[in-house]
Length: 304
Image 1 (cartoon, rainbow, N blue to C red):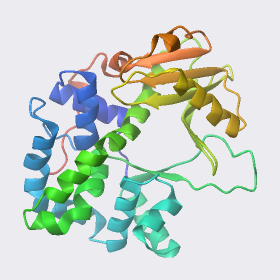
Image 2 (tube, rainbow, N blue to C red):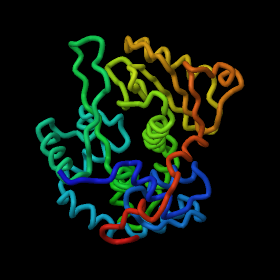
Image 3 (cartoon, one colour):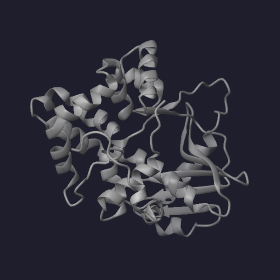
Image 4 (spheres, rainbow, N blue to C red):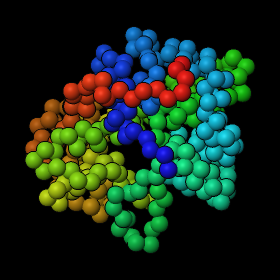
C-alpha cells in the first residue's frame, strides 16, 4: 500500500502554504482543499473558491481522479457513500447499492491506491456477540469533498449547471466539517496531555452508542471526549451527553474532555477540574507551532 502523509502533516503544510487569517478559517478551507498542496487565496470566500478552482475545472480534475480509480463505477459509488454517511462499511455499501462482494473488491483497490484507510473502534463492544464494522477514512480531505459534493452531481456540472452541487454543500457543510474538526481535536489532545501522555486515541462505536474521542494515557487512564463544532457555546448538556454515551458503552472515563469551537458556558467552565478538561479553538494553535518550509508537502500532479 502506498504511503501518504498523516492528517496533521497535511494540515501543517496547508497552514504554512496558505497563511489563513484564523484557525476556524484554516479548518474550513482545509476540509475542502486539504491534501492537494494547491495554493488557496484565503481572502476569497470558500464558495467562490470552490466554483473557481473545482467546478470550473471539473473535467480536468475528474480526469485526474479517474486515473486513480480507473473509472470503476463501484469505486465511485462507494466513495460517495462513505463521504457523507457514517463511514461504516455496511452503511456505505447500502448507500452505494452494491453487493458485499463487489464492494469488498472495490475497497481493496481503494486501499491499494491509498485513497482510503480503515479505522477500528478503540474498544470492543460490551456484548461480545455484537459484530461492528470498521469505519472508512479518506486519506485526503479534498477527495472526500469531491465525492460528497461534486461526483454525485456530475451530470449537471458537466453541463455547466452548478446549482445542485452548491445547494448540497450549503445545506450540509456544517455536518461535513465535523469529522476533520474531531480528528484535529484528537491531535490537540495528544499535544496537551504532557504529564501523562496519550498512548492510544481514536473513537468508540457499537450498535447502541458512539463516543467521538476515546483515549488511553501512559498511566492507564481512560479519557473520553466530545466535540461541538458550532457557533454556540458548549453547555453542561454536552458533558451530560458524553457521560450517557460512556454509560451505554459500559465504560468509565477517568477524564472527560469537551472540545468546543465557540467556547463554553460559565456553568461548564465552573466545572473544569483534573477530571474535566475544556479545549477551545485557541488550543488548536498548538498544531501549527514552529512551522517552516520543512512542513510544506510538494504538490504531486497538476495545480488548480
